[in-house]
Length: 149
Image (tube, rainbow, N blue to C red; front, side, top):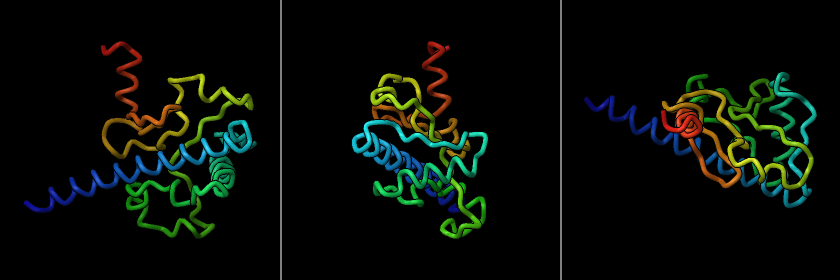
């Protein structure tokens, strides 16, 4: 009887930690834009997943956004807790969306997420963070965009 409760508490803690990671990525990207007056221009494409992830991690690392912010605790546990600081296990569990180099573009698209969780591990669709710092789950966003149908 206690085991399901522990699982529920762990799932909630993972989701909160995941949301905090998204907030830290958001703050890092915001700091980058303040410092360089543009969205980080990562040269690898999302199709080159590992290179793209690593380029984003490197872009935000100097802005107090450590590698740990890119790691979802639920994904980490599912993978058996590999040492994500070991180059063999480098990864990012969140995807950054590309924008053009114009300074205000990321602020002009309210419905375009800045970062999105790569997997749906928290139950209601991938977690996403938007230009105003709000975090939503994909299923909620789809429902809002479709008019609640």
